[in-house]
Image (tube, rainbow, N blue to C red; front, side):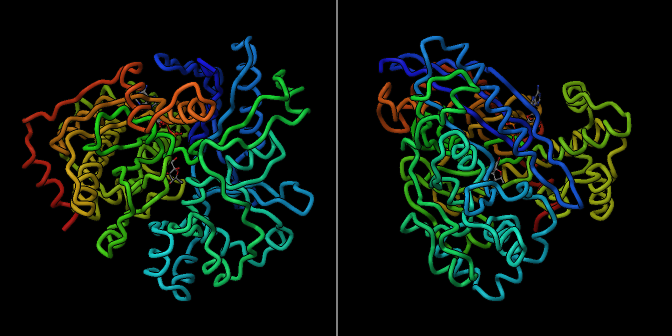
Length: 491
Ligand code: ADP
Ligand code: LRH
């Protein structure tokens, strides 16, 4: 194949989309075919993902892809947010609706697991940071429930959707590395941890690598989408962040990235894991990247804080237009109040404006007086957390960084990009917004043979074909002001 025409389905925690990409040695274009919301639904007190609506969104997108590519599709790749999964019964049917990672069922579970398994040992095996919602803690929270008793298989979200498309079960490596149950050294499920937690080894499907062919479309799927049954579904970096990092248009390796959407994933691409105690204490993770790379990063709470605030304002009938609020926020006075976005109070859904105001009062700062002031507070707080995390990553991995690449929906937020450059004291290269879908499509195109080369080569293609915007750090206020701000929150 000279030119690959592929569909990339990218499911984020806030929205899903199916993109059509055409990729060749000197060609990369991407168009959006279908976008749909991803709103969790609380049922009987539990926060669920509406997985069938997401699957329908993917099918609708694939149907549109078939129409937009009359010559046929060469591949389909799926990525989504990490850690969440569906359980299958003995016949392969889904048991219940997947539970969202922000559900409170994992409260206190991490501590219980750590009483039994030394967290330093967990880190040595998996290299993974301890987030309360990691799959390991979700599975332990669900242990002993009727659903768990009936379960024969656990499939992470993109693997579940790929199973529905093809009938083939597997566990793609990059996403499996976010579960807390994958041995980072062997690249396979950790029998040690699975046994220690009394989980069933057969729950875990064989691991597959990005670029592998998963299978072809089931006849009924071909029928409903109008696609040929021979279209292959290909494994990509099915963890959205893994695909986003592939989609970073960096030149060389002296860069940090921020994959900025619902979360800000802030870190470095490394050839090998960093498993130091200091890194563990600082909450840094070693997630598997494409081509054997390590994503050495930390989760920063991200634009979730804005998303939840808008949701609350919208329910209250207050202004909830993001672009207008950001315009106004840019004119607000600087450095009035900042919060630590990673404070656990901000993790669950709820009244974010009230929690932020409360945080400000508790730390002796004025509570934001208007929605625009609150948005200003969030954006400054994120910029500060971005800078702090880039700095920590550089120290912990002993790496030099010349530029910070900011990709994802956050690249549309000019105020955030500029303040991130200011706080880091480094240039920020913003874009592409759809880095994840691009990374997904590039790995497919390479698997099919339309392009070849290393991640650096794929990034060269990205640099030639996707526009970015460069933000230089401003000198007024200079770095000292940001250091002062930092001292308000972190000692
Ligand atoms: P996810 O993949 O986690 O669902 P995205 O990468 O799609 O997230 O990013 C979504 C975020 O991008 C939104 O929450 C919003 O803050 C930001 N965003 C989207 N469009 C714009 C815009 N026009 N201006 C500023 N920010 C935007
Ligand atoms: C971003 C993301 C992130 C995970 C979180 C659950 O979408 O995949 O990398 O930590 O969702």
